[in-house]
Length: 309
Figure 1 (cartoon, one colour):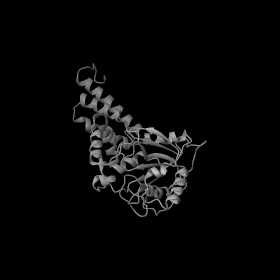
Figure 2 (cartoon, one colour; figure 1 turned 90 degrees about the vertical axis):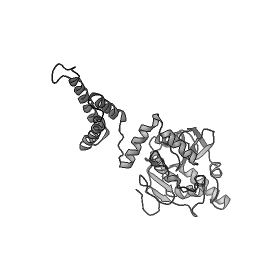
Figure 3 (spheres, rainbow, N blue to C red; figure 1 turned 30 degrees about the vertical axis):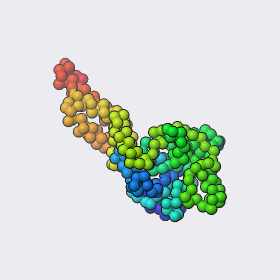
Figure 4 (cartoon, rainbow, N blue to C red; figure 1 turned 45 degrees about the horizontal axis):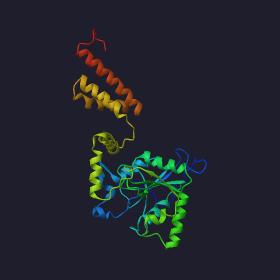
């Protein structure tokens, strides 16, 4: 889905900040830079490259889903959730010019700035950046990679500080086109966090292959698959996969293995017929798990009466 509203500032977001930094849960805007040339990928459409069944851009948009306004600086495309679109002029003017174009559509006191090629970025990292900014008097909080290099496109900034630095830079350099990000961040007071996984970006096909392989590792594949399915089906419900897996295991063990996937489908259907929330799924799963235990006990001869369980 895309937001085709005409360009212009969105309604102002209210702030609940206290002191010098954002309060817990304070509104923030997100600016995602997705219009680069991807030269190291041979000019491929990098934001649309899929990792774990989801486009890189959609993965980043999921990490900042609670932003008051999300601006993507690129030519419009289909996305998993509505966003606003911006473009630097001229197009391809570099990251500083792109950031300036995106920031013009924001109103919140804090701005999270992200690149569109971060396959392992999660909402927890975005919130950590905002919390670090809240607890400091810095202009921004950014991640560093595993080599200690700054990642200015995985960062949270005070919007006023960022706007001021952009204005000064434009005055000093006669414009923003073609300038590297270090020209901008060098004028800001920054606090830094280390998160090698969240700061991993995909610049080459080797990076893409590495990300795809990691997602398919045993410790990650289930959550990645469930997230991809929910994204594909437009489901925003947080499901406790352990509850469903426990029910499926009990059914497979006590009834028949093919009964497990069919039963989990029926659990979902029953939950949708009810309140349609995570608690409904948990209740339906618990009932099915109890039924599977009773079924197994009855057919294994453990029950002394027809209703024993």
